[in-house]
Image 1 (cartoon, rainbow, N blue to C red):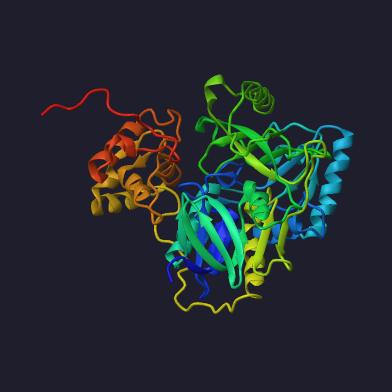
Image 2: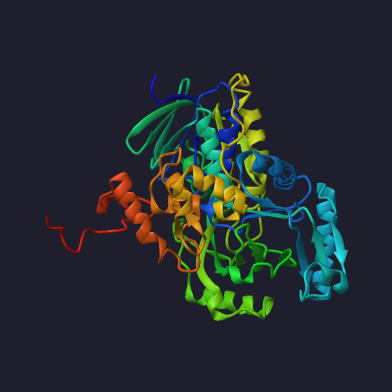
Length: 489
């Protein structure tokens, strides 16, 4: 019957979508419920985009084992899904003798976790990897990488959708009831049933637990703010540069992070909040990040800071405690069929494909999982963007479709065809942010000043949009309130 599924996943972040894709390899029917109008609108799109090596987590924990396994799986996954990834390595830098002790501790920890190639470097060796890097010693972890986190999340969702997974976007879960054969879920007025329910709700995972009478978990949102630097600085960093960790901190400290798109990020900060929707960027933190940025990259200019953003970590530790707790990934014995994921913060992005395998095996204890013969494991299209192709490849595409020859976004060199593809995405999402995250239009120095009016024209002329149809990210974020004047015949 309609809206009856074998498995329902609550939450369309990177972990929920990785689970959906993994289960879409099998014969079970799968649906994903997400309160936002698109996937990857929360923690999964608002982070450093780092593929962690596994040095920071205690041996024997889920965080450690799933991080290292997920890291090893990511290259093949990104190849199949046409997602850019680059294992550029990382230097964790010590500035005094106490921090050197920390480097040796995390090296020993990383080796116990099976992280390959770890090496303590002196200043001369550090200089060869990253000129002008500060510090007196550094730990080099070559298996650290970078990725676009929202591109991966979107790719996982779209591939799961191509293999039969249903997505209910813009459907916030309001109630869950345990019934004889599974669960009944209410979401924005719609009722769905499932034999197995998977809680992958991130910042709201404890709320989902409470709907089923589980009160042992709490989530404490912790905001990290970032600054994005202009692509003028592309090539300044050869590797990621992190400070040596300090016990009790909520994150890994403010650091410099390359992105696969050519920008550099400075951040994140750490600030516990009450509101899991508070993505504000604050003047004090922005000033702090600018100061840290100038210290790490003295050649920075004021004009190099092009944008700020923030993300929220779903922490299980109270503000007065700080630090990290292990992931909660459990097949509840007291509520048959409820698979519960709580506190999946960093390295959740890196761990996502490994978490998906673990959860698949849990589902297999409740339902028969027969592999499909017709599973589509790859995505079509380009890895990257039109402007990254050779002149010959560009010419061939333009000859086949003139829309490739019209640049809509000058800063990022995004073509009309790429914008049209973003609008016509398989999930049917048509917010401004959905176009932005899929095409990279509006992400350059002018932040949409040139291309947004052109995208508005495309949506109006080719898709019949009215002023009230334009939404930034959700139903309460209209781009327009109406017209200043009415057209006359």
